[in-house]
Image 1 (cartoon, rainbow, N blue to C red):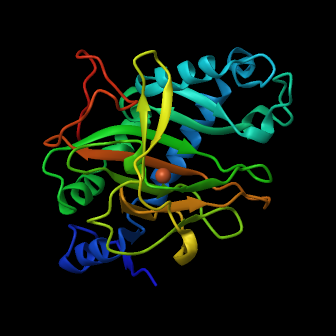
Image 2: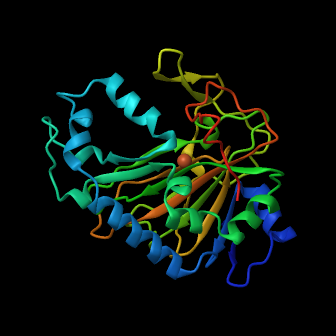
Image 3: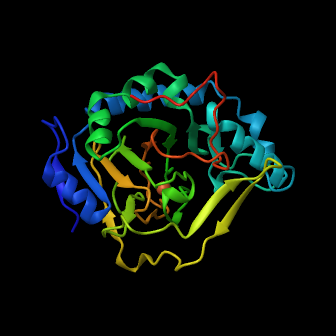
Length: 291
Ligand code: FE2
């Protein structure tokens, strides 16, 4: 079992917490973020969805009208924007929604933390900053943010992966901070992970931006992720799961009637090398910021 820490009175990452992170690849901090902040994020996301014109991007994601290049571009250009991505089962062949617009979105990303004042405020909560430094990041930078809906009935599964595949630094420094905006249970598609000391592991795949503005996933050799030892990481609202970029994780589909909203940040150490082949790139006038 992965230890769980009551973080209601959290002040810093204790030696026991750090050991748990190193032994398991994930640190479970219950009640780290006040429920009122979770509610504030959910309400703000509701406003963003209300203001989103669903007709503009649906065609890009329709298998009939949209090309792979268009979808790549929509994704790659989202690094410094707030963009909306659909659940696979929410669009039919023509790009028409099969459900209510607010229930069609899979996630919103990837610069909520820098562009929206409410997301900025919660993203830079001093407790999250203390988690980052307590886990060893000397100059923590927030690279990306995602609001993930895991919609009732159609929320898609996320296959086993390591986040370092998508955010590569040398040495590996990426840490994911996963906040349960709503209770996450096995029924509504909570995170699962394979606990272990993953510090010496190497990602077996790397996701890159190509010179021609596309993306590709490169196999680096080694064994594919074996999810056989996976354990559920159920999380009450306000819980933060902090996990290494090398921690193998996944989530199942949501076939329940309950949504499973989560907000994630990915941080790296600014002291590490950040290759220009990473998909997320910022212009000099909009640099990555820390807490
Ligand atoms: Fe992930």
